[in-house]
Length: 123
Ligand SMILES: [Zn+2]
Image (cartoon, rainbow, N blue to C red):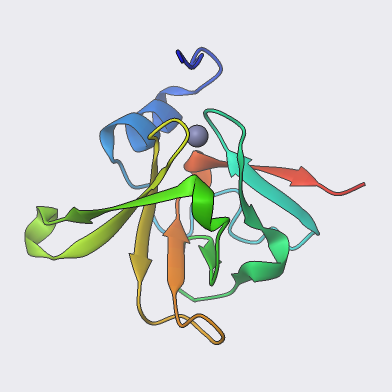
């Protein structure tokens, strides 16, 4: 299935298609606290729920859980580190990385670029 990417900005293309990273504390969703869903900026699938978002202090939107069947993980050894990249399983867009230092109950931190997501507020 071809996914239309015409709606993406140059910054969003860089992050979602070329594994880019937005500067910390720059993202528009970092301080988003409303109730709703975080969808893939490219294909609009729901990837995260606002109830799993938390303040990690990292400078990027952070979640302790995700809609598991929509997320794909891949080992990333760039920058001399072994990290686990997370991607949208539906359209293969880069989202960010997952780290094992999140809060309970999962202990996971999904560290995601604002540019990879769009927020849909629950009416
Ligand atoms: Zn997607």
